Length: 365
Image (cartoon, rainbow, N blue to C red; front, side):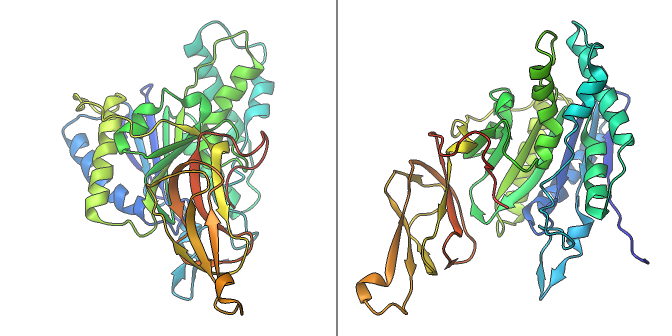
């Protein structure tokens, strides 16, 4: 009683057009780089809007999680998990596949444009009939209601200490290569089903799932949805934010949402790799961690990437435990603090060889 939340949505262009882009920041409220990028992107889109350069509709949600933004404790913003049930705000988003499939069976035709329009119409009707059960579910429902009919959906996040990287659905590659190339992603991680139904998959997976359910009719991949990891949690600066906003502006321009000719597409820094090929390097002993490798370095299988120090062990030669990689690939993320306990993830390496079986959860909590 006596509390409320506000979700601010900034709209550019016309909703009556057939092109829509949706971008949000702060679904994990404790990840700050996205807010800074939004600040600079808003300024660029304001200018483009004043010059009548916006085509279609562009929606920005600069602070996507007002619930998480209120979660301060001991001078630290939490904002990743719902305090009521400990569920990650970027997990358990709505899966509309079966409900939509039940409604469109027998109504699809040979026209892919018509099929996209029908599916989106049914998605909208389905969402309007959903009654969220709690506050966090209400937020997830509202965000999906804003983006379900978008051609492009970008969800800004960041890792702990990391290089720029992107998560997207396997069926969206290589058509989504221009996003990774334009923003300078050093890793692009692909999965058809990553586990936990994060927000980007809630927007995009319905298209490849329905195409699989109805193989006799054309159903395009009508939504490029991606989670954009804006480096690490401390990588907040005007220089980074301006650079990233400019790259995103050029991406939107190249995709036809902003009039004018975009500069040439930068080369892709590194080809996409399967999310199943990511090694989550875990500690097996307790202690403090000294990393020997940095994010952005190429790792070979067997390389020592860190040492765990425990001065309480009597034998001096056993006070340091080496942590080795089980795969070859790009070290794209390491933990923000330097504490280890058995089972804790210390680092992530993007390799090409799948390490997990199909159906396994590929994301962290």
